[in-house]
Amino acid sequence: MLAENRRSNALGAGQAPETFALYGEAPGQTGLEHIHIEDIKARARLYDWTITPHAHADLWQFIHIEKGRAEATVENGYMRLGDHSVLSIPNGVVHGFEFETDTIGWVLSIETRLLETQTFAQARKLLVRNGFHVTKLDLKPPHSEESGVFFRRLHDEFAHMRQARSAMLDSLTNALLILLMREARQGKSDDADASQATGLLAAYRDLINQRFREHLSVVAYASALGVSQSRLARACRRLAGQSPAALINARLLLEAQRNLHFTEASAAQIAIDLGFQDPAYFSRFFKRMTGLTPREYREKSRKKQGR
Image 1 (cartoon, rainbow, N blue to C red):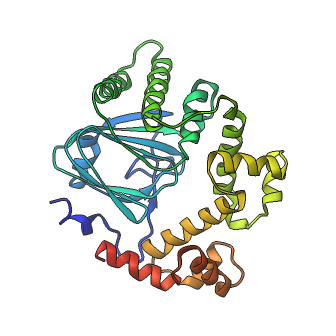
Image 2: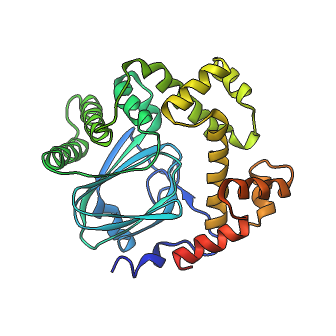
């Protein structure tokens, strides 16, 4: 059923993914708290259990399916979710869902600026070390039961105006994130001396997201961050396995792929939007990164989706 409905989760021709506060709500439309949690059915059933591809500029989300199934669209790829699956989605990532009717689970949304506070320092370190990318967890006992307890407790706390409610929400969310990221990083070694590099990489990624269209040099980024180019390079290679320049190029490529997949903008229009002065150079850049021309990539990605 979900595979047959895949096309219903696609956007129409020329329709770019929208950016919401919560799905269906424009930024500033509602008084969104720093932490928000709701059960999946509360919003999904309003849209016939189909959440079209969209993004959240300032929210990191965790989708927990306690019982049921879903097919997730992440950028222009797909993944299946089942019982006790958790999907971690950083801010800015285009995603959508086709939920099985009556799926039981939770959507936890956290403002990214909250993750930068001292309360969430340890959780943020684990998130950064995990690479700031979409992460799928298929939890097994006892972790599936533990995470379920946290999600339900968070939902109950969020729904009632009790004393010290904000502090309790922070504490429960912090503990849940650490639990989930421990599971995500199981079997991976952590260097206790990596904390400074972790913070630097997070700041660098944030700055890239803000300014990638300006085509700044690595030296300019390092200067803006107040560190040397060599220190930035060590942090990127240590934690991301890539050079600082490669991370900039990866962000440019991601935005180009989004535009080619979700919109009808020409390669020349996309090049201009991304700050390339020469559309021909953009096409060469894109082919060097993917092995395909922009046109070939658009045709291949849409054929794969069935558009």
